[in-house]
Length: 95
Figure (cartoon, rainbow, N blue to C red):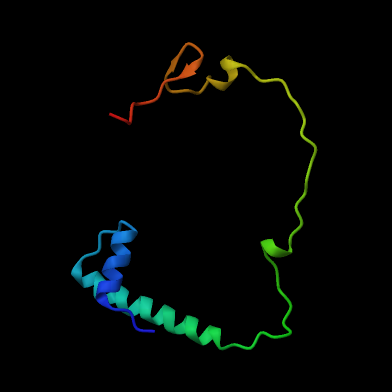
């Protein structure tokens, strides 16, 4: 599958990557090679091949919820860079 330079520039923009002109050509070739290989993999006959491993084969291990006492603000705020009484102090990020 061929990918254009405009496609790579668009992908870089979406990924918030700073890509200059010399990198675009190299990335275009690399992404095209990756997509070509994916096309090859699509043609592999996997009928009758069992799944190897992964999240789909695992079983979830459930445990009972256990109520535990809170360690309290002295312990939870011990490593806070800044605090105001029993609260974390964080920089303001909204105008």
